[in-house]
Image (cartoon, rainbow, N blue to C red; front, side, top):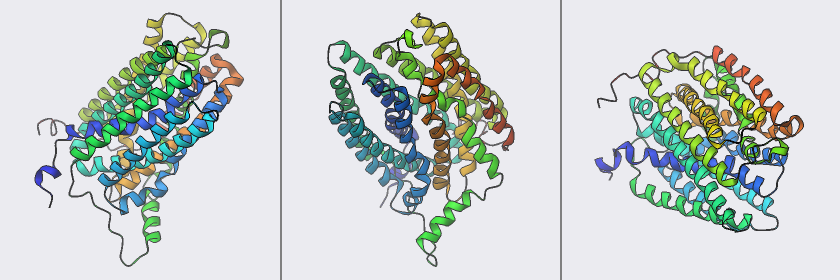
Length: 432
């Protein structure tokens, strides 16, 4: 029988670590893999195309999200998928030095991505089941912050470690293999921690199927309810196009920073990229996320939505400047990346809260997974061709195109309807 202690642990004991665990495999698959393959000599076109396919598990996760809702508990799924992710990280480390490394590592990255997407379903559902709505609003900045800390550990720490080993004279494949072994060890440590500290919320139990109907009917019912929401067209447009410009940058920033100046890049070392993009940039993004969460908590999403959409898009101008001027001053490059990442962190809060808002209801876990799956589709399609587009246009023209691609984000924001009170809780949580 569950004790009161096991059902009501302090959220600070588990929310931060869960979102660290959620962010590490995603960051390794989507961002660190780009740096890895660039250092191993893969072209920008192939990097963007094949690593963008890793979004697919997040795109299609709504298809199997009802299984997470209908079978076992969210806590069970969290621990199972963390075990698989740790094992796949070790497998990637083993296969990086292999002659067919691109094929093998992509296969393990895909398995890790599938497990990570399932892990996301369970974690996000556990977050909503284990916290009251006021605490969900209060902790949205916290979860985003610790998600960003995981990005520092992965996008910064792993890349810096690989760069350090490269500088020590280790061959590039060996250096990166050691770095991924370190990631595997750290992730398995998180698994052990969560096995000990995760609470057992009373509401964390399999959803009841209608005994008079079949599983397939129940599955389709849960799935279709999302598309019957009021204003679904504008909801889908927002989820698909709010980050249309940013999704094209994400696969190109690391190659731009690493490519030599004769190719239009900034010619930075692996370690410098780890510090600038993976550490300074992520810290700025984290601060922006914290301030964004607090702003929504104090005044509501509707009050800040237009400030946030501007914060996401306008700082992309720094890449236009960097590609045109090609500065060699590291402090200036750091400042530019920090400004862009701060704006993105602040503005992404609106996206997170919007997904929570449209997911409210009996099947909030499944519907939130569907929202994030649609978000992933909006990221996958533009990112797949960004490498080819950059190689055809060059870095300078590519970043000019990105600025034009920010226009849809403003249009879809004007289409959505937001409750003026959503996310705004005054001092209710702070005083609890």
